[in-house]
Structure formats: C-alpha cells, structure tokens
Length: 125
Image (cartoon, rainbow, N blue to C red; front, side, top):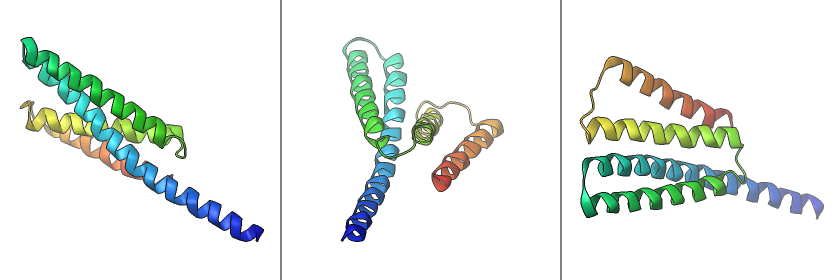
C-alpha cells in the first residue's frame, strides 16, 4: 500500500515536471513577444504605439506567470536560464527576420551556441 502511494506520487511529479517544461517554453515565447512589442512600439507613433505597449504589458505578465508556475517543480536556475535563452533566441530571430537587422557570422555562431546551451541544460536537468 505504501509503495503504491509512493509510486503514484513519483508518477504525478514526473508528469508535472514534463508539463512545466512545456510551460517554460511557452513562457520563453512570450518573453520574445514582449521584446517584439517593444521593437514595434519604437517604430510607431500615436495610438498604435500605445497598443504595442499594451501588448508588451500583456505578454510580460503572461510570461512571468508562466515562469512562476514552471519553477514550482523545475530548478530555478535551469528554468530561468532556459526562459531567458528562448526569449533571447526569439528576439534575435525577430530582429533578423522582421526588423531586418544584419546577419553576421558572429551573430549566428553565438546564437547557435546559445541554442545548444539551452538544450544541454534541459538534458542535464
């Protein structure tokens, strides 16, 4: 009986941990979204600028709430690094593809090392 309860708790924890990895990835996308909104707000004026700022605040709040939820079972250092890394990669890609920022060997090299590091943190955690 005790073993059964213990096994059920381990299985539940494992499912929660897997779900929280999905949540941290979604939170990272919202981090990139709030940076994107800042970039768009900088390029506009008037009402459109304020709408982009509203988008920034909404994306920021969603990202933070999801980060808090994910860190309930994930190690805080790993979760924060993955969250920040996904946001950084997304922001750089948005800069390249949407804001027409320059594509240089150095940027692609360091972006690649960042992606490899994120994957490595996930694998060892």
